[in-house]
Length: 222
Image (cartoon, rainbow, N blue to C red; front, side, top):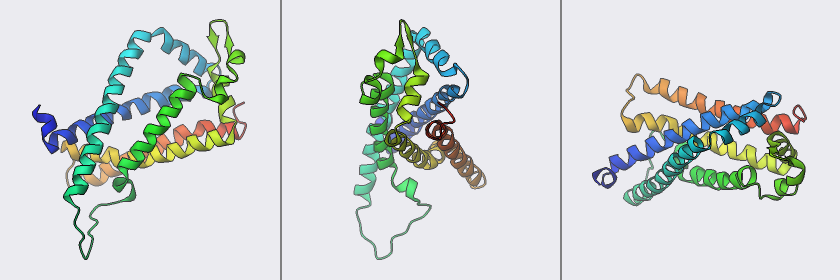
């Protein structure tokens, strides 16, 4: 397939798959934020289960996007490093920043976090959740609110989650802007605005996701 044989084609695949994951980040944040509404997150979880076929279709698309993003993202990074494996007396760092130079590492850290997050709140096999399953289940009902609050009351778990949100912030800080550059949708005049919007969006995700463990740790949510 010509698309995956060319560097430009693979960059486009990485960009589009990345934006599909950004869309998921937006939807997931909206759903998680229902925890601030009495009974909201339990109703949200029940609604998702009622839409199982649609949910699984979305999961298949998301998994495909993750695989494409990781595979070609790592491949392009390694190719780029091999191509630039030359030491110069002066190293030029045009438009370089910490987030952009460490995309592969922030991406891999997010992958590790997502795996742990799924084990915790989806498969419910981590000790903080598994030990409380009898108390969280009541017939056909499952208390998602109590599960989340109980887990984030552990300082170490909340700290891991907050650290992961910083990593997500760094990845999107560069990734959102890079998407527009890869697709050729930015110009000399619009680039500063696109960069600003991307950074603000990354910061908004950091604040939105971090608000949940912070409010639980400070006992605003109990």
